[in-house]
Length: 187
Image (cartoon, rainbow, N blue to C red; front, side, top):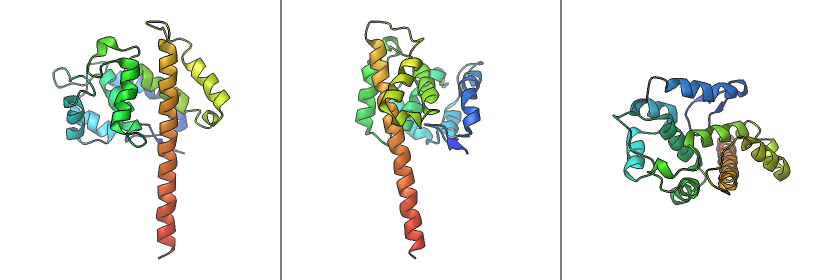
């Protein structure tokens, strides 16, 4: 079974999920990636990404190259936009990273946040049980170094919301597919 890597247009198998972080980091070994590459990975039009930069949702690319951190911010936003309003997404990102277009006040790197999310998303069936979900969240933050007391709890809250929004978006897609099939069968 293959599924779309959250926030991307890329399909992966469950076995490939453990390699995603390594592959993404390898793409950036020589520096950043171009807007056209970000567009292919995310499935977003280049003007949408440029608009997000103009609106201050992420920092400007350096020499027209996007960093892994910027790509992961885009992936986080893209993943959440199917379930949350952009204002809510900005509030969520600001809750853990202050000003969205200033990386110096971040309590967690966007790449670290995205890869934590992916490690949790692999266990999506276990996330339905609140006790199991909270245990997995605690485990995922075991190595997180808090820049100040309470930062880990903030990250945990955001991850919980991200997981819930992602699950809601998936359920919405399933419902839309069911409605489409219903219409097709009644014609």
